[in-house]
Amino acid sequence: MICEAANALGENFFGMWIILTIFGIATAVIMSGITFARLYWKPTFEQWQYKSNPKYPKPEHVRTEVLLTLKCIALSTIFPALSLYLAAQGRSEAFCGWGGKSLFWHMGSMVALVFGIDFFEWAYHYAGHQVPALWKGHKSHHRFFNPTPFSVIADEAVDQLIRSAPMLISVVCPINMDLMFGMFAVFFYGYGIYLHCGYELEWPDAHHPVINSSFQHFLHHAEGAVGKPRHTGFFIKTWDQLLGGDNTADMLKSGKCPCAKCSRGRGERSFEAWQKVEKVDYSCLLQPKFWLEAFA
Image (cartoon, rainbow, N blue to C red; front, side):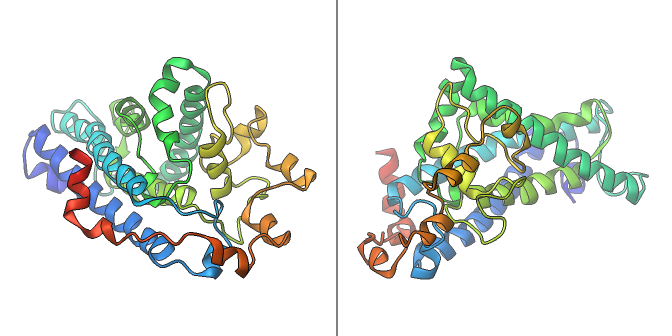
């Protein structure tokens, strides 16, 4: 589908970029928007019991997340557009459809992409907390200490460009662009929504031995700083555990773990506590004037 749309424009790089950006914006708005509406618009007591941070962010906070996300979508589609552009010139191995490859080849590509990109994301993210020069660009993302589903890619330009660099992999090896873009737009972005949604699940909970949960990422936003690479992983905890970046096991042993599950166990998520929480009115997000104020 992506190649067909791009080929209709011939070798027009700008046209390809526009198509991919529109598709990316539509995907992000729908996926993040539905999740936000479900969890934040009119939250219930039952939902709040699973929220990592018991407080709700201000509308201005959400607006900043959305505006940064829109900017970053436009940046994240540069490399896939370039990959298709180079393919049209015979300088890339990007293709759509089956491309003469077997089902087994495509399944293997999916597995390789998941593990390869998961490691790449962790490595770059870890470096962003260890190298002062990289932290200068990444620290902007940490302004969202109480993130919502709109903060998945609310980054600065350099961060977003580097994180989307794997989408240019077709320069060195064949890759199905429908598969690649679909995995980034739905699978990776979808898991990113879970990590940034601010809510935890019954499974996987914060203390799953392998799977990186939304609680780990909440801690990352709240505690992460330069020289403090806590919970920088994406899908799995393994890389963080190897370098001592996952301290949730120690929290559990100490009896002071702040995750929603442990908080409920200590009686900290009672209905009385819920009644004291400020319920934020997000209806202003539907008013054009509120958005224009961001540029005043």
